[in-house]
Length: 151
Length: 117
Image (cartoon, rainbow over all chains, first blue to last red; front, side):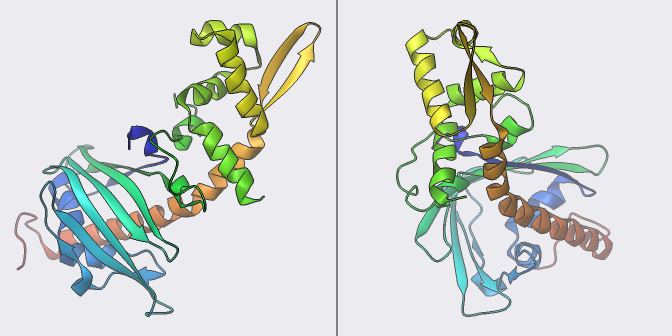
């Protein structure tokens, strides 16, 4: 997979120092506290993080409305630079077969005690049925294209 | 829209040259000749890419006098964007929670280097 896989790019600033934001991704207690979006939660006992290159980050997302539905996420860290970069290759299963994606999270200073976070993730297009296996390495940087930057 | 159409859109966008052509067409319509010189590719190569983009309805090709020019068609791009929207929204919600979590953590832990174990 290559950088062309990243079809989703988000940036956001946090009123917290880089070390605090970085730790929120790698500390199981903290991850369980915030990672689930509104409709799902992450049970603390499902979180298993070995914060080293080649180590893993595993956790389940459980639907609030139907706790029998659990979605397992299993990521392997491909790059870890303390307070700077977390990159991983993850596999998860939303119910119709495993999907592979990459993610790269970058932490930068954004003024005193503030952090700018950039998240790149993809390819989400791999989740389109029938396309899962064969899309190869190149994929659209749709965000960049639509934002008018060089794709 | 059918999933097949969406799949075709993403496949067409999977090639960096075709994304480059679309970016160029955002600035205005272009003839094959203009694209050939802009991308330093052979005319057959550009024509092949244009055919893929046209089949995915990402561009429309029109003939003005003897010149055939290509124009971007935003509709499938909008659909592809819309398809990604829930994933963006998921991260937006998630990062909103991270924001709140970090604000709480700062309040509870005046010294951010200490962790409770």
